[in-house]
Every structure is written in structure tokens, then in C-alpha cells.
Length: 600
Ligand code: ADP
Ligand code: MG
Image 1: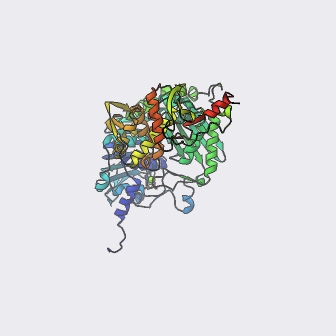
Image 2: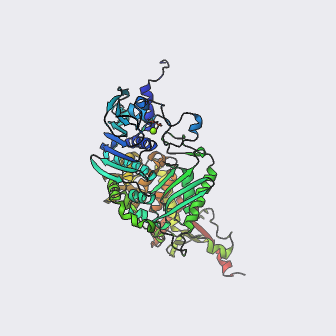
Image 3: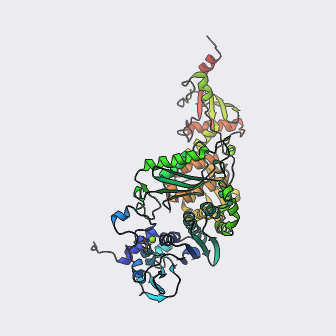
């Protein structure tokens, strides 16, 4: 056994870097947050090579005193908190004092800063953890940090760097989040010498317009509610402008971009009545809450937070959104268009919007899908029978055993009714099948079984199709090649925002490959490939199955209907669809006889 030794300071920082700065975008996030914390009014970002070659963030904030420059690069050194008390009321974005030390341990870093009191700027450099002496430099008020050759001394981490467009897409998304959170600050973004965005200080809605694009902003309803000591403000999209994917979901807690299950749930619930379950609401929401009521020290990158009174926060968000959305009912007076007030300003947003959308084309993706086209209308297939026979009559029965020599349990198909139901005859009488619900379950169970057995077959498309995505979603193709292959996809990036679909999972060969790939990439971009294959697996497969399932109004031939019935008999849990509704019901001859008063 080797003896126990303390790790070197450098190694400690490199280990921390593995958690905190797992890719250039994460380093960019830390640098941007430091600039915001320093009270900057303007922040300029320059990138090269997707941020891996160069990440430079310059601000006009308070600067760092020259005697503290070395300390700024030291681990666990921060100007933002000093006591446990402070930690419980954190008002700044940073507070752990580990970002600069971590970044400096895995790059060539140069820090130039000048405070108001100083007569000139000072510079300190750090090369893979070796700090140079502080020396005078020229530079404006504020701080400029240059990070070159990220991971130059940690080859294992460097191997995980993806292509330049992919890393750029992640940096771009990071930039958007900070820009949305700080509408009153000016920002600029450059990559390889090309200007991608220039944002002047703006009103919140103008900023959303500049960052997310015109069509997104046009669909937004303003919101500002205070209750129970918290304030929720920002913008939510009218349900009719919802999106097939989870783009444009930006949630900030005290100025920090977060992913939070609790809040996501509250939002989804508020939309539940007005949005089909496969559509996703779009929003840019800011929750302001007493810092003592939220723990921001719960995650290495702080992307998750913990509320001290989750239930109260959930209620507050749910009610605020429900109230706002209630004003969008059909027949209600048209919701006050937030834009009409700001319309005069829209033209003044200038080139900023165009600049940003140039990054990934992400802003062009909003679709105005009318609710009616969103799949099967919600309906209660049993209601009619229950009204006639009482609730016990039409309960889906357990699958009966085939009588020897008789019809199979679900019988033989007779016809299709209303484009929705398959009617069949078995030994007991009439079988009514909700064909979409049943087919969806069959595909879902097949996908589960195939994935468990690691044999989801890929079906090549005769003609590959391409789709346009946000750069971040397209990046998921490269980030998650293994997961996609396991799911039976063959996808390749053609450009930073175009992806070609060459093969889809065989059970889904009838699905629209574009819509299917889009949903899957979105899910991966959102949750990460690992979670999509583990805790979110069933959710993911259910989404996929829904794409493949036969749509209402598709006419089926008798052999197709019979094939469906046979597959149902062979599939576990085929009595309920993936949403828990029954897929079929038995109406016995006795029930029919009663209905016609026969034999009485
Ligand atoms: P933290 O942000 O958690 O305090 P960092 O390692 O990110 O830790 O930064 C260490 C310290 O360096 C900060 O507490 C702050 O005092 C100083 N600092 C970093 N970046 C800037 C900046 N852009 N402007 C002014 N001070 C900065
Ligand atoms: Mg920091």
C-alpha cells in the first residue's frame, strides 16, 4: 500500500477544474459571473477555437487591487463572503473562490486589472498553476482575463473537447443566459475575430427580443407578480406559440440561471390546461426571493438550487402563471400585447438581434402550431359506454384466454370507426380498440425491450433527411454519439446547425424522422445523454413511441387491424396506453342483448 500523502495544491485545483470547468463554456460562465459580480456595465467576450484556444472576458467593473491579484488566483480566496452567515445570504453569483484557481491550473491565464484608486493597471499570469510576479501593465479601469489553451496540461480532459462548432454552441448558450439575466448591461461576443453579438443596455423585453429573436418576443406575455415575499417577473409565451421542444425555457433565481425540477413542475402544471402535453411552454422568468430562503451552494456549477420552503415557492409560481394564462382564454379579451408598448423601441434594438441569431440560427425555430394540429384531441373513450351502461359495464377486462379453437382474445377486426377505433369480434362479443393508444404502447414496450437487450435495430432511410436545429441541439449529436447509436439513430452534423438523419430506430420507421430526431436531440440537450438513458429513459422512449404511433384518421386495412390486435395480445401492459388510459374495451353479447331488450 502506498502511504497517505496530501495532494499538491496544483492537483487539488486540477481536480476541482474537472468539476467546475468541464468545458470552455463552463469557464466562460465563471468569468462572466465574476464580471457581473464586479459591477461591470459592459462586458466583452472574445473567443477563438470554440473557446478552447482563447477565452477572453473584459469588463469595466471595480477591478482588483494589485496587492490582491495573486490572491484572486488562489484557491478558496474570495472577496464575496467571509462567514457562514454570509454564505446563508449570498447575493453574488460567485462565493467559493475556486473558479479562477481551477481555470488557472489547467490553462495559460493572464489577468490584467485596474481599480479606481490605482494609477495604472497590473498584470499577473499563471501557467498551469505557476503564478508569475505581479507587474505593472497598461489597461483601462476594470478587469480583463485571458485564458489560453484550456486543458493544455490535462490531456485526459482535453480528449473530451468536442469540435469547435460544438464548443462554440455551448459558449453561445452560456452567453445568452447571462445576457438575458442582465438586460441592463452591454455585452459583445466575438469568435475567431468575427462579431457575433453586440447588445446595448436594454429593457428586459428588448433584451429577450435581441437574444431569442423577433418571433419569440412577439409571442410573449409580460408578467410581474409579488406574493409571499417573492417576486416572479418576466415573460411567458402564449400557449398557442408553444414549441414542440423545450427551447426557450429560461429560468433565473436571483439572477442565476437554474434548472429546477420543482419550478419546472409548477410551470408545466400552470400550462397543463391550456397546452397539449407534447408541447412545451416557452418562458423567460425571473424569481426574486430572499437569499436566505434559497441554498445556492448545492451543486458544483450552481445550476441547481434548493429552496428552504419548496411548497410555498411552487404555489407562488403556479398561481402567478395560472392567473396570467387565464387571461388568454378563448373569448377573453385579447391579452394585452406586451409588444405594443415596446414596439416603438423594437427598431432601435438595431443589429443586436441579427448578430446573435447569426451564432446558431437558433432564433428562427419558433413555430406557430395551432393547437388543433397537436395530435389526438383529449377525449374520454369510455364516456359514451359508461353513460349507457353504468361505470362497470365497459371497464377494460383482463385479457381473456382464447377459447380452444375459438377466436384469439381480442378477436378479428370488423371495421374502423370514426378514424379512431378498431372494432373487432371475439368469443365474448364486441371489442373496441383505441388504435393510437394501443399502437403507442406496443411501440413503447418494443423499444424498452430492445434497449434492455442492447439491440435497437437501426433502419436506414432510403433518402436521408436534414433538419435545422439550434447550435446547442446540434451539439448533442457530437456530445452523445454513443447514446444515439444505442437508441438506433445514425445522425451526423453537416454544419453547426444542420444535422442529417441517416437511420432511425427500426420500430419507429414510420415516424416523421425530422420531428423524431428533433425531439430526441432536444431531450438529450436538455437532460444529458446519461440521464436520458437512465432516469429519464422511459419518458424518452414514450416520446419516441408517440411519434411512431398511427394517427387518428389513418385508414387501416383489415389485415393491418388484425396485426394490431395480435401485437396487442403479445405485448405486456397493452391494456393501457402510455398515459394510463385504457386501450381497449369489451362489450359482451349479454350487454348488447340487454341494450336491445332481447330475451326479456
Ligand atoms: P469567487 O467568484 O467565488 O469569489 P473566483 O475564483 O471566481 O471566486 O474569483 C476570486 C476573486 O477574484 C473574486 O472573489 C473577486 O474578488 C476577484 N475577481 C475575479 N474576477 C474579477 C473581475 N472580473 N473583477 C473584479 N474582481 C474579480
Ligand atoms: Mg467567481
